[in-house]
Length: 446
Image (cartoon, rainbow, N blue to C red):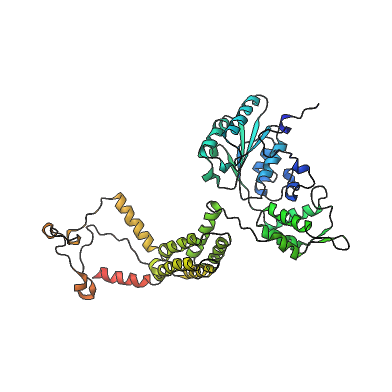
């Protein structure tokens, strides 16, 4: 009996083998059947897999280094690992961080040590962010000394989800969501391919319909192929034997559009960052768009309101004091009304904040004051400003010589309020703050 080379053999710990049984079955999902089998079949990701690009050179030359593939679902992270498994002469082992434990890792490492003298071992860990720090530390020594070449795949930012020492020994390749043109090309290939795709069926679908699917897939190749397959499988042929895949079928196949939004990771905070910066930059249209994305993805309205409240003080401040009042009222209103109607309240607030005059003078003032409190000698409260409400206070000189502003003309009197005067609050010329600036100038000139 002829034995396969080690790199072609199944590994006991693999969740998905380089050539799974499912891939050879006619009833496997279209997205599985149409997985690229070589770098040349990959659509998109040209920034890393095009000829001459780093990953292409590494794979084609079988000069593997530890890498981490990072990006949203359905864009080819696992597919690239499979392609590597077929291209390399190394033993290729896969683990899924969701279902594997430390004992599994130690067995894989022990096998790699035994075969090291004759063959390199490549370990692919899917969803590597699911391994905790202790589990990741198990891999460290053998990745460092070359016993293992690690390929990790994750939807989470590796900088936050993977240990620093392990990350420093790996190269990060960020995979990007496929654009509409790339997804349309994937769908065309699936319709034409007779061996693995839908080419054996007479499917009639024009580019407008394919583009509709691509748009609703939001960069996810797997989702686009799933929608195509659902539409084809659930549409009966007409009298001529053609499956008419029109816009109505596409709409039913796509259902609700998916917006990738990971709750407490990069896509969540990146969207929130764009939302805040758009309001700060006085762009109401962009602000409402990022608001809509967060609402559509199921963001907690209270999270959105917290950002609006902070912006009302940090970026608008006294240029429009109404901003904070409206934001506070908005918080109460959305909790009383709830979604979906709360979206209207949020939109009103967001457009107001975007178009309000801006000033960060209050923000700068408190930061500078905190810096001085931390780094300089802390100033003592002058005696005339100290609390004089208790019996012995006057004997200690507390409150003596304090000048009550309301007893003076204009409700203002000059007196010392801090031993070493400093200027922290510098009102701008924006909105109502211009009035405050003029008043401050008059007071200081007296």
